[in-house]
Image 1 (cartoon, rainbow, N blue to C red):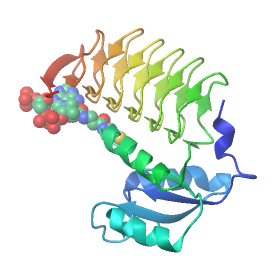
Image 2 (cartoon, rainbow, N blue to C red):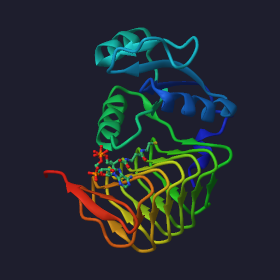
Image 3 (cartoon, rainbow, N blue to C red):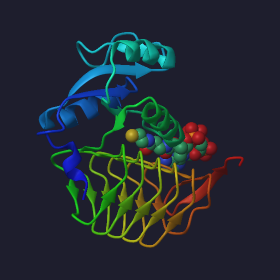
Length: 226
Ligand SMILES: CC(C)(COP(=O)(O)OP(=O)(O)OC[C@H]1O[C@@H](n2cnc3c(N)ncnc32)[C@H](O)[C@@H]1OP(=O)(O)O)[C@@H](O)C(=O)NCCC(=O)NCCS
């Protein structure tokens, strides 16, 4: 298991975070006990005031280039963009990596990650969440506060399992899916890429790609264009 990558000792140092919203605060709190300090924040939006006291927010890729000119090296980075924006997380990940930075995982001290689970680069496993035995999680995924991803689940890249959501065993989730807060996905269900599971939904049947489902039992609300 690659959990040790976030432990202090050897790897401790400076981290930059793309996304200057509440999720940046969550990540900063997660990595602080591991000996990491947030050196800079970046955001495409004009941000009034930094979410992290004393840490400057640079605007967009232009701001990143300014910061980069003054700071060489292979600093670690995290992407703090939640919701259903997995595609944005993946794009930013690739661009920061291409600029010479190193993706970092953030695993909260209170999270349980099975020793034989795997977690892709840049993914987050937040407070009190669970990643079960033989589960495979892709790149830039968020297993949010108090979420549970049980045994032998397979998650693609850019997936967000929101706070309190539960994936039972052997669930398969495609790229860039949002599983809304408190949703439950029953065992062996397959959810197609870019689908959205509404908050509190109970998913008892497979969900096609790009489809939003809500309710108990979950029913389609809409399907996005390909
Ligand atoms: C499902 C969801 C994506 C739909 O959002 P939306 O497209 O803006 O939908 P709307 O708010 O316009 O609602 C459309 C209809 O669906 C219903 N609806 C929306 N979300 C619902 C939910 N979670 N469960 C049941 N019904 C829901 C609305 O009541 C509305 O019904 P109506 O047409 O009969 O009035 C959103 O409500 C949701 O649940 N997102 C998950 C948020 C989340 O957990 N984020 C994690 C943050 S860490």
